[in-house]
Image 1 (cartoon, rainbow, N blue to C red):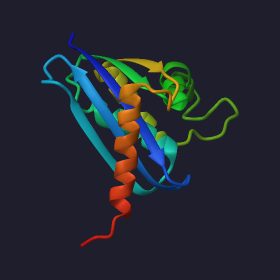
Image 2 (cartoon, rainbow, N blue to C red):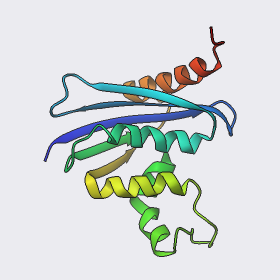
Image 3 (tube, helix red, strand yellow):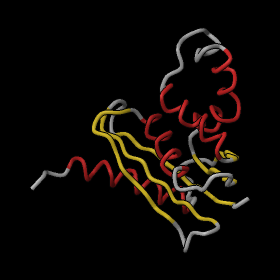
Length: 150
């Protein structure tokens, strides 16, 4: 089972508003690291956090083991604590309201079958080098969307 570290972050300018995501993936079979970023012109911060995770996981081979490092409690608690209950309740939260971002959570649920994900929360903007880089990638993606097209 190949092992990987995935660092992710999402950002949004306004919530909702233009958003960006970034990831850094390191592990077996990767020369150095794989870095990715992108964005959406009208989104939310939570969608960008989830998208960063999904985009990074897409580069992990089947049966990989991934330590996911993120400053998003939403991602960590969703993967570790909430997802199975949401599914049991027909994609409803404990208060019976619909799960937000269900489309992305369903994709993450499928990834949990394909790879083993071990989510780890870190405090954001706390001088964690990879988290700071991912934040810069996400913010740069927002800036690229805002730049005038030539």
